[in-house]
Amino acid sequence: GENVEQHPSTLSVQEGDSAVIKCTYSDSASNYFPWYKQELGKGPQLIIDIRSNVGEKKDQRIAVTLNKTAKHFSLHITETQPEDSAVYFCVPLETSYDKVIFGPGTSLSVIP
Amino acid sequence: DTGVSQNPRHKITKRGQNVTFRCDPISEHNRLYWYRQTLGQGPEFLTYFQNEAQLEKSRLLSDRFSAERPKGSFSTLEIQRTEQGDSAMYLCASSFDRTYQLDSYNEQFFGPGTRLTVL
Image 1 (cartoon, rainbow over the protein chains, first blue to last red):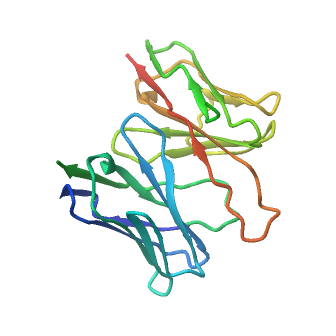
Image 2: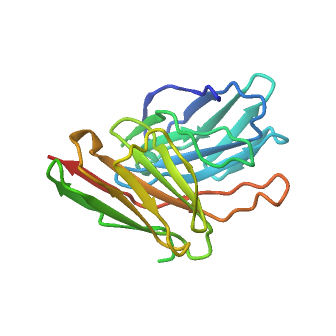
């Protein structure tokens, strides 16, 4: 099965700074790379994703970069705001998947 | 609100009691998933349905757990003879199966969860 590691496990940044979370995986069949955000008391929510034929994707303050050769992809959040505080999960998948396998995630705290 | 809804949001019960949770998926979604999440961990897959058929069950789903989706719409998750180790957040998610489309992704939309506390 897929072996996924996410670093760091916790991250604390000052408001306005950037945050980067890195995810490494082992299954070369993975071809779809979403990031989920889970705020306190809520279910996870897909915030950005990237497919294996793309190296980078941006959506306002968040971006995801993919290095398929090295089997890692990263989430970048610029100009962080307190509402970015949450747990973030990377979930490398094959597109014909049946279920999402979550790791422990990264807890991001943005200090005002 | 057309998102996934779950009821109740919180449930406190005594050990040994039975509890039942309900999930109402997004109306056009044919897949429905149940996950369990404990503090500091990511959600763990329990089971999923395609319409009314239960297609996969995790080994985490002991004999005390049963899930149903009788009409292919809402689903219930029942835990019999609850134990303190069952205390967790139970999350439901739904998606629309697009596996017939090449390179498709069935994005899962999660509900807010039901927090179970077993005393």
